[in-house]
Length: 186
Image (tube, rainbow, N blue to C red; front, side, top):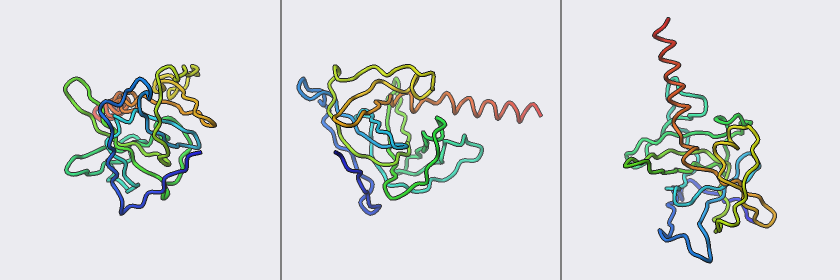
């Protein structure tokens, strides 16, 4: 059974090293496992840029509740999202195992870097495509839009999340377009 990684702030940030040729016939793709609200999730490790201990981000005025703010990482301004708040999960106070996973996705010729708050990072998993099971449809936004599948590893079931949909900007754009249309119509 895996243990939660307790990360000391003086040992952060942790740079994630991975093999660009991660998909091997015998091993499968690599995923980084993490805990959130007592459940286990994972994302493709190639999308994880680094892991940082929790630090309070700089708040952004008029931002959605789930946008915790921004942090400066070596000159880059990175927005931090709490997916608990984004998808209506119960909020939990941040503690010494709380970390920010900095995720990176490529869209066309652009790169998008954002951080998500998770309770703890726990495992690196090798998952073969045939080991991924389809997630049941529930009507909940997190399930239907963000889940790529399920992986059963001994006594844990990991929910495989789509980084592309987690970092989708549609909700944020909608929030600001409503806000500005309300302000100008008054």
